[in-house]
Image (cartoon, rainbow, N blue to C red; front, side, top):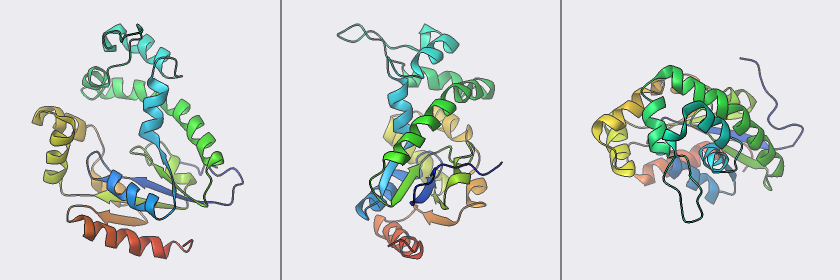
Length: 211
């Protein structure tokens, strides 16, 4: 996969942060935010673009049908029900690929806009598909957050109120953690205490050379 220009001439340090679902990226993100980095959350970008009126909303409804919509709200808008959509795409790799084909180009455009608007020298691109979508090729460094599989499963069930089957479906739809670790510049093991995680983040932060 060829290198892509995410910085577009800006003198910034672009840190790509990734890790599989429920491995605890959000905790590491907050630690980096506290150290002065601007955070760009790719999942939040998807949420916004998937709202009624967003650039992903219409194409997704056209591709997957109105059965993925929630009931109308108080003004009549029907949002995409991400749980209904997830039940379709995480059970079928071809459907997941179709969704990603719709969303990835639009998400990348918005990420590029946010990078250009970032007010700090260090910018963290938090993206679960950082590697798969090719965005890692435009980063100065890639950090991967990991945790033991049993902790990942328990966190996902608790956080999203998923059954064990629902949680496993989402975990198994992703490449194994080992594939991300293999290409990481920094691996943060988030399977222990927050203090242990923070110690790893601080050590890696100091080594970036931008502190």
